[in-house]
Length: 190
Image 1 (cartoon, helix red, strand yellow):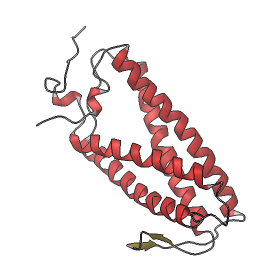
Image 2: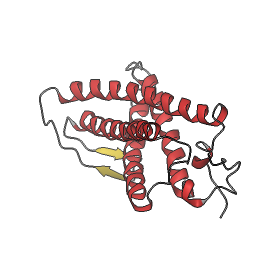
Image 3: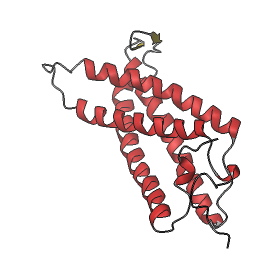
């Protein structure tokens, strides 16, 4: 079995993610955690709360930016590819990781889509921080806002569960297996 590289400086480029991929990964994670926390908090706001309109405005605006970030991330992923698997990782582990990543992407897309359907069911567009407006499509099916809202909520919960599994796997690789899996998704020089 081949020895694992101990730091990013000696890890071959073919085994690590490039710095743009790393940045997009961590920015996506930060935005997703922020949106989940904001969404979880704002659903209990009452009409008399000073945040009743502000919190959803921020949630929608950042959600649209997340959609753009997700498209950029997918474009970059297909353009730059992904690093080779670490030499010690078996095929089954690679397939499990690929499945989890695919589900993460699909859930993110589903959450963005259902959020859009909730927000535009009344025909109004989504204003993004006063910079631009994403046009609304109106109600495409009966009870669109309610159905999309329920899906949006449950997709978000499933996403958080998968994110926890993803993070637990990375931590296990780093502290138990002592391999370079987590280091691959960290910034490096050159």
